[in-house]
Image: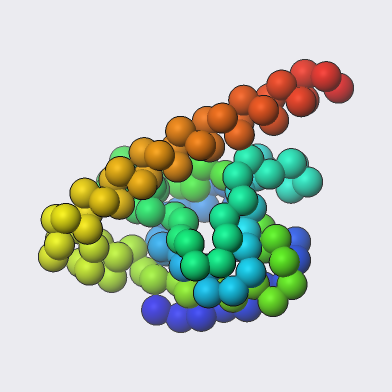
Length: 126
């Protein structure tokens, strides 16, 4: 585990990057975007929340990150937890916690689907 600091607009990961971390937002916020469209966020995630669990739970089928992620505020502070620690702590040891992550990942996937639709609709207008 390690803590990293990001400035507004700084990239945390890129579409296609291998999913090797789970992220907890200690301060600030982030936005998930299509690569090359950082000004159009699909979803914003705030301080005290987390992200990156979906790809970690896909296991060996991982094809990389689905979106790019950018800090959305100056002084965004992220705790990065490795895939191995995430899997051991939350999926292998505690099946209730794993079940909760699966529910949250499903809800977030639905939220992201709505965001994707909004961005696609907006892009059609150009």
